[in-house]
Image 1 (tube, rainbow, N blue to C red):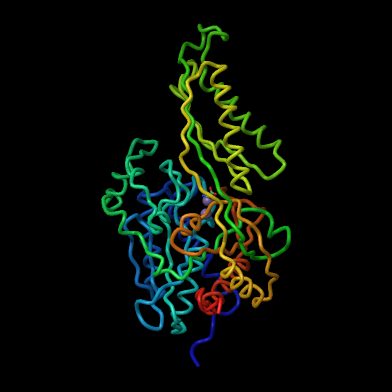
Image 2: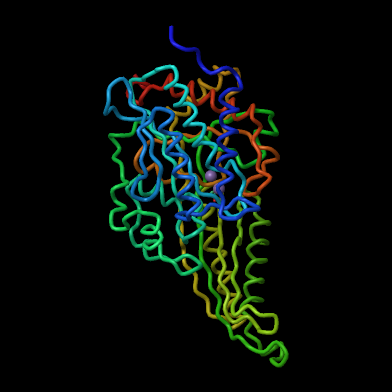
Length: 421
Ligand code: HGY
Ligand code: MN
Ligand code: MN
């Protein structure tokens, strides 16, 4: 008989230790910010690669900056069950959004390795380089590269400091002309499964440590720019002004009001705004802001976007502001595969937990991975439903429960053909 499986609590303690180590790698000393292709992003990648190797995986950085680990099956070269999540963060982030899924997957493989357990398929762990889309206007860059849907035209896009993605990739040590090398083909992947914190309050309300995701809600992101006329704050009469910031403020409140009156789960957020020239005594002449719109169904979201755009156009027209509106990101709702959901449900029930299903309002790498594999997700409860905030927290016992479910899923995994026989 080989070594015993991890004792209760052991996987959870290992996850917390790794989460703390990753959270210490930040661009800012007082909070956690780790943006795509920054030096800290690179340091986190190196740490993840070392953990993957310690867990018995062959590991490398791919052409877009994803960290990729592979644990061979009973013989080398078999198709894989891919596990993963992202290692970039939003600004002033929590520690768990992204890294939880990644370090849990690494911990599970480490446990298989410790026991010398090989499976009739390979297990791969992918740490996606950019899911949040904070640095450049586009998002899901890491998983799109793996899915073979990376749009090379985004290489020319620039961050707020004017650095192009092409130059940032070069500085990171990658060749921007070879991002295509990160792409995988469907025959190599049996499925993509991601564990992630829930980022909402549902599991906590039901007193459940984990939940099975039914679908990932689609999203539309837009970049808006309003141009008016800068001028002297003391001399230009109020009725003669073309104040771009006041116009943006009206648009923002309009978006909020419109989404608030919706009864069916529509949400709209303006999360970034930049006003120029940006001085106390100058009327703002130019403002850029972002808009993020989500709804439970694609049809509902598309109708809402059309309505919101019309309202913004009317505000701009009335205020004599020039408007530029561009869709920077559009993702359809992605269903989680029923055959994978039922295997996750079995693993949850086998851990003595009620198998509960819920949708994801947040976006995830599965939205891109669907183009190369069937996808599924397991959510882990977080405290107070708080996410994208430094107070984000997962109880170590819940991290442990998530890991035990994931490990059970891996060890009992049946590829689709076998599962449906
Ligand atoms: O925005 C999202 O839903 C994800 O957290 N990137
Ligand atoms: Mn996030
Ligand atoms: Mn995330």
